[in-house]
Length: 301
Image (cartoon, rainbow, N blue to C red; front, side, top):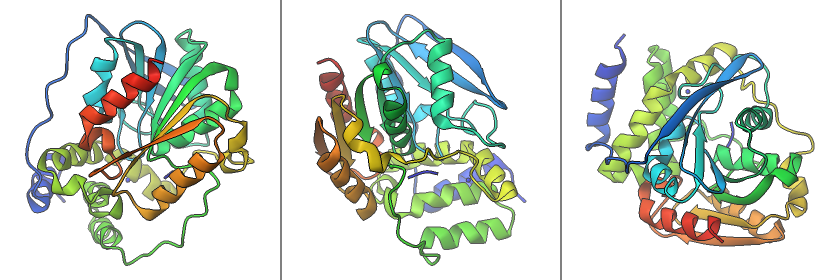
């Protein structure tokens, strides 16, 4: 998937109460050091965190959220790997996405600035799509791919159903100028059936969506997404990706994401699939221990 008058805390309290989300994020493991920094990219900047030592692993987050979606895995992986997670342009602590740019080019500039010549890429949703495109553009720089419920450029999405409940909720919020309400309406989508029924995951996803309301403000003002899609798109070139790849998909994710996973498994030359039972679009949040075990096993081979 590619691809956002009360103020923040008050709206968060109302929406969290309405959705039944409760709980606080679990404490993170500790490591000796977490380096942070910012890399300048054309027209913006990219914020990153880096921890650990060993083979390099880069974590790419989904759309509408930020690098913190990897909290359940980041520091534990850093006990075995050199792990980098970053905020895509327009999200988290990175700079705005208000002019034409390439997510692939941003990743390349980040890795170059950090002196990384080869890495494994772990991408969720939009991050998976970026990882696929990067593997095609710079095959010699990618060791392995892990794709969690990924999108893929070139997939023919069905026509938008404007009467989907979450879209109705988003339009109602937009009509009142409630951009936080627009952002958090995605919790009612078919992608997050499991997430919104688990109080802890629901609260965490709500926090991530609400904190990234700036993306939606930009999309609403500009009436476009500025990220450029490579031509030809990855879907038409999957057979050229020869690195070992693991596709992880939640058993309850949407039919389109299931079809994308099927396509990747059919067309990628060296691919394995793992279905996470009882998860939907964010299996690393909904079944964190299972996903962590898969990552450690696959990346450590």
